[in-house]
Length: 267
Image 1 (cartoon, rainbow, N blue to C red):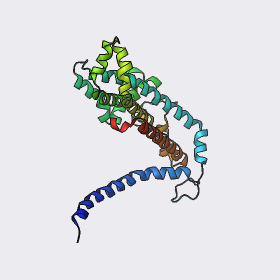
Image 2: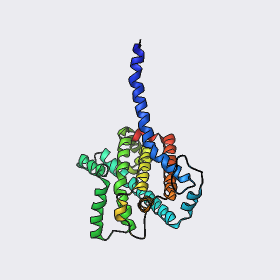
Image 3: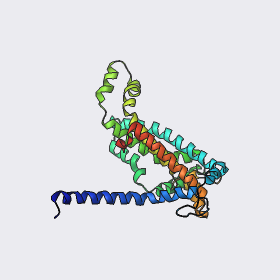
Image 4: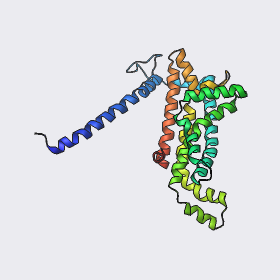
């Protein structure tokens, strides 16, 4: 005879098992890529016939990969810094209701999060073709700012929503001007949220393909676009190796940020 407590536990257990199954299913592609990166053969076998770091050595000695990594880091770091400046300024103005039509402005700033990336890429391609920015580093950097600034605005607004304005007003009463009050009082209080937004902005830029592929020139490419192009030409374990490095770097950054700032509160 089944007890009432056993009956109550079954739905919870079923949901837990279903969630675990979904997590495993989602991680299978990652596991396959990592196994291929360490395989001694040029094709994937499960289990691998042997383990080697040769593919990682090939990636780190290949000028095309090194150039793509350099370009990706330049774009990711540059767009994150610019997005921080623009996004924090916009979020603060929206929070203080200093701009007319705040809701409409917020919707426009958040639009890249809901618009298909391909649509953004095509739109920027048309605009850059008219203005001569197509293929330029500046144009590519600004395109990455477009897709990363929403993360900064969203995290900054989330942080500011829990801020007591009386603290900033007290700083002004004590003699600080508006900028000093923001820099010395408000900024330290919202810093964890900004770090969370900056991390998502950095990773979004670092991993982007749909927008970047429309705007790059023949003599410059990013790591994700190079991976995409390499996969089109055939499966190469060096692609799995560089993908594994990208996965590891992203995971380490997120883990450190979570332990230091608990950034899940701002997403």
